[in-house]
Image (cartoon, rainbow, N blue to C red; front, side, top):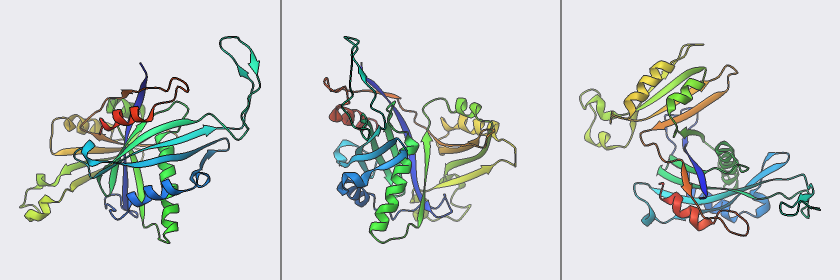
Length: 293
């Protein structure tokens, strides 16, 4: 059985310096067309001196294949390590031969992905992991770099920022326990919890799909881990809480940021491999990943 691990992430556009103010004016479909039409050489993004990546394609998924999203895209980003051409060793005969590849060539790895838009200001990334491919964070860096290039091609200023967090599949309390401190927790709550009398909200205001955000920050050098765990416990049975965003640090001040959603999805899908190359058959993983939207 050929199984592949899937991880989930949220990518957000927000107004400069204010993560709670959504930015909804970015034309992602135009950006996808821009990426697809670039020359191969212009799609490259260097990850380090001996590894690079490049979007292979980004395609619109027709609405008949999903529900509850504004728009969805299926795509693939390829990568390779290069700089060596050591001799090849045959498993069957234990004999060696010269490697025919160039120093600038490497074996292609592929990470497939789906971008599922909740609205124009955010989308969920369903990301297929590849052992020698790229990480979700490197994918985010690729998008940021080429969004900037896309806006440059339109002679537009980039008047927004982006943020990406993980949607946790494993027990979030286990992740919290591995961090030294939890320094911030944002709780996204249905604004109707205030009641129409509290802020004198009109009916049209209540119908806007926005959450109240309760932002809790720890004092300097303190942790709010226990309080965060208590809130997480309420996530599964309190329908007024839609999601939680957590920011933590280790003792070296490295940050970890992630979203916790109500729905924890399966980690693995079964895919078909090409018998000659052992690479994933694109139609196979597309079908399986669409089922995860």
